[in-house]
Image (cartoon, chains in turn brown, red):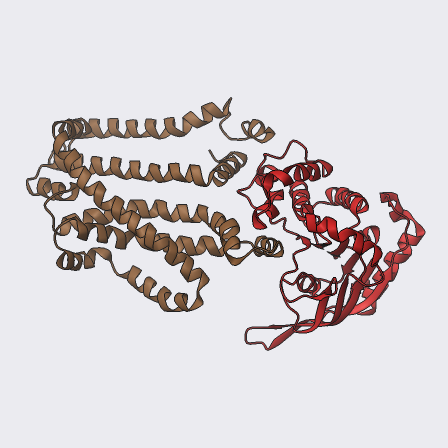
Amino acid sequence: MSTSASTGEIGTLVLPSTGARKSAVYLYPCIATIVLFIVWEIATRYGNISPLILPPPTEIFATAVAKFPVLVRMSLVTSYEFVLGFILAAVVGLPLGALIVYARPVEMTLYPMLVAFQTIPKAAIAPVFIVWLGTGITSKILIAFAISFFPIVIDTIIGLRSTQPETIYVVRAMGGTAFQVFWHVRLPNALPAIFGGLKVASTLAVIGAIVGEFVSSDSGIGYLLLVANGELDTRLVFACVLVLTVLGLVFFFIIDAFERVFVRWHVSARQADLAATGSN
Amino acid sequence: MRNGLAMKPRLVFDSAEPFVRVAGVDKVFASHGRGALKAVDNVSFEIHAGEFISIVGPSGCGKSTLMMMVSGLTLPSAGEVVIDSKKVTRPYTNLGIVFQRDALLEWRTVLENVLLQADISRLDRKQLRPKAIDLLARAGLSGFEKYYPWELSGGMRQRVAICRALLNDPALLLMDEPFGALDAMTREQMNLDLQRIWTQNRKTVLFITHSISEAVFLSDRIIVMTPRPGRVAADLRIDLPRPRKLAVREATQFGTYVAKIRETFQSFGLLRED
């Protein structure tokens, strides 16, 4: 407990309590965003920039409010696609990563294929998915899956492999089975890396869904974005981008919240580390 | 735990028969593209129940490999390890093990780390809790039960690891340079603590170190090993009265033992002074 009291004074910013430190974590990026919007607003209003090129933020917000019902409807479609794609990627990626770590033949067979598959630009094969699965949401789910499952597999492998051998010896000397070594040592030890992979995957899944909608669709934010672009409705284009940003952020923070629940020990240790080195 | 208690009387009355017998043990590692590497060469020694034995040797002499073979976590390429009249062919589990790295599980609190054995053996956690709390108290860690490992200092972490190894009341305690990563002062304290814990319950201990004075301070017997491939160069009985205080290190007899081991090392070309 003495750690939190003493680390408060070490940082470059002397904050009286951890409460103030915590609120600063949210306050600083908010201030930065507001400043950015103000500069943007002034530049577009007085800088002789056509609203067709870059509309001022207030107009983007106004459009978002005016088109709120359609934006929500399209958001639901897109969210459905990337959330399902992401879940599919996790459901396939996590066991596959574990299998590659535990079974050498599986590793030798699948790993090179995985790397080769990853080097294919997913946008390039998105049209193929449409041909196979139609223009409905199934193809988008699969593209979101294809683009987001690689980091999950890789980080699961890295996490499971980073186990200190001594921790395994200790459990085996207690008579632990291979499953107990996995359950009590390797899996919990891998969770920070796995959550790293899940976070990267969460943002990629959104990209996958949009790429799919770009190629061919009749609904979703990506579809609306293309339509707005075709009509030179730059305000709506930016409103779509705004909505996508919010969706991506919400999704990211949901996973972050899960991390705080499942890997509390690591989150707190990481924060203590940061505080101790004064990099706030 | 029940096992440990049941075994104790037998260990005491049966002390003529060695508790651990290492007989003609070799360990050869396949080295990538460079042929085979012999780490341990025809090593034999015995440990009697309740004895504190240290193995000292230069780094890379196969001390750790030897300990891994005694534990059954690695099997010898030749020869055999017999514990309690049974040949070791898989991990021997009536055992506590401590490494140089504390190997604590970061996601468990101090108390949960000490109780790890309960989860692995599916024993009743509630029943073992008082024992774990008592072990921590004896290690000077009262009040730290709910802390996480990252909140503790290196010496405290290593003490938690020792408590974890003792929870099951194991017949044999294996320690591989447990204090090697600690600063000199903490290390001396840990030596005193370990001696106290050992005096209280007289476990059979196999202790690996590269510090000659640490070995002399703690041990009943010291096995000195040659550089790789490791062989037994000397087997030395340490007759110093117990409990030993830090000042024992200034005693003439202590100096004689240290000198003897140092000379053994120098006889095979180590610790050159020119």
